[in-house]
Length: 365
Image (tube, rainbow, N blue to C red; front, side, top):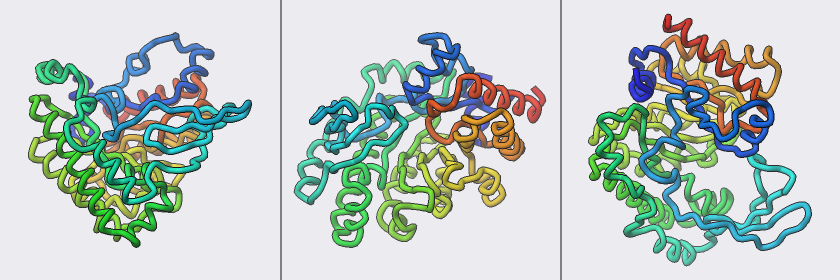
């Protein structure tokens, strides 16, 4: 099977020759450590680990975010930290001795009033050539023979607004100015549909789409399921109608945190793959698989904290989840977020070997 065929068979509960392999390598600090520990310099990580799926590397559009993102500007610098204005206009304090995935401190956000939104809206509507690759026609022509799964990120309802307003201000807006919430989500819907239509018009064959919501923390959603259903879900429903009409086989959603209360709403729309199924927030593929069966597929699900421990820690975390996930299919085991730099190269290689052997045992390869 090609990588593309294996990914589609895995995520649609078909019969792949083995489970698709995938992860994503988002932190330069992790790679720097791994190269010190034996990873060949400049090697392509997906090729090195024989991955079949990477939604950040193999996509039909240049970025995963549909909002304009500007080059950060340094406002203040000391020996310990940098204060910078970041891509959406937010101001953050970043500690110099704590590289990503350490989180910065947000000092202010891009939007603080309706007037701010009205100015910002003018930046995201209309023709946005930077959202399309220069070689879209070539990608479309190569679609029938492409051997890897390619797709696109199709926007966000809550996640984008949270980045623009901050959780606290946005939470008040849902009560104080629901009309503004509706206006903003309508604009984001037009943005998502417009980009999807332009990509599909090229003739490219998409294997997957991914929504980005990032709307939960370890104790549950940042917005009540009722408000999410009322205000945010219509965006996803309209985009999914277009996705299904186009025959795109796999629809995925990326949100950190405990999203158990929201999964039924997403499944009802036909969004069947959840990522990253964050174990640190209590998400467990075994519990969700018992609840939803083959309605729910997973990309992720492996506790990154265990991968930083001993081999016994890794075995205890990984092996039971492989047995549960591989039994029915629909499971690409991966770190439940970007792989942090406290995971050694040796440990990650050991984890990938466990996954390989588990797939061979389950599928008889």
